[in-house]
Image 1: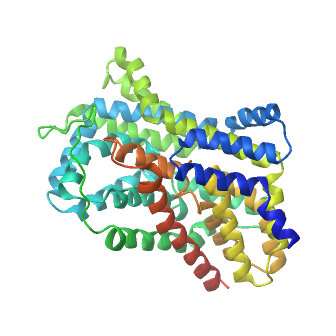
Image 2: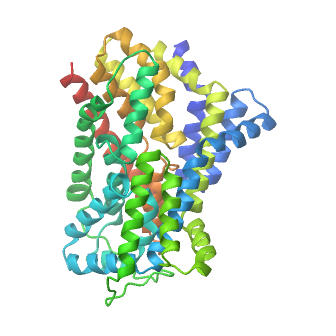
Image 3: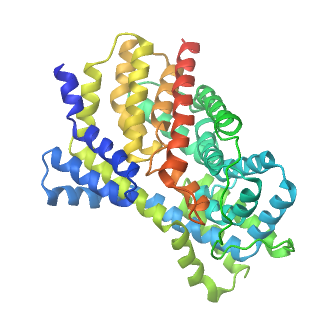
Length: 439
């Protein structure tokens, strides 16, 4: 009972619960994170000055991600102003006609490509999605299904495919397992995590064909700065845009630096005069407009994570959970998965959750007799859980940025809750299936 009391009174536990409550009460996500951070620090015994110092310092942990989003936002803006996205949107509309499943399939493939082939991540969403809201309204597509489709495309590839963001995620898993005393080959990661990809597919199918298959009506409201032209044509400059996108991917893959890749892509577009040089400032401003809010949410989420870690709240939470661990491998797996879900919901990043979980849970797994594939599945799933569904995750912020362009899509109730239910439940079930199969 004492361990359970420590768990329920833990600052990390209370602050994440507070964050979820505030978001459900429709408090702005940015403000909800800041309030939850203050609550966590004060409950952990820090004074307000120390909490804010750790919070501001910790924001730097996501500075590369924030810079990536701003530069990719600018890159997406140049694609839009070159007319490239008009062509793509027009082509999609022509192909779709009155077949809504074709539209959902195309959006799935584009979202997946944004992770592994042309790694612009969520920057494509505010450009591609708003012009398509009209046809979505016409077909009466439930935007919650579209949110699930986009979240799938943003999340599944990095879990199961070792390229682009997937390569970064899977290398991070391998590095942290090795650092905690278990040798693992990097090419073993995707072989084990593929079963989690199957879980994501199952969640997607349930969302599209069962939960949100019924028509849903929306008003045809105007979307600022987004028009869909039927006479958009593919021009020679659009080949430059494609080349710039490929260069972004190659540089990112070679240097493991997404900001550098985006910078190279922008350099190609401006040097080839796809966009006139005098519009450079406007493109950067538009990039900040498109992705600035998401970038700032990621920054404050990193500050929240820093307060939870530096105050000892995370370690205390994990220690409380470890003391309650059952001796069964399957029951232990459930506890670890739920803890991973809880932590990621709060800090909003599966990539940042991996080191936190690995340092304490890999030794526990070794002691309990988990084999290497089981540890890979457990760590990957525990880190990925909550990324879909967290109010502070780019997996949810991105879809909302596009689908709410006309003010008819709620971040919490239309993106976070649908993605949370369909993907986190599926990931837990398929992770347990994987642990059983790899036994």
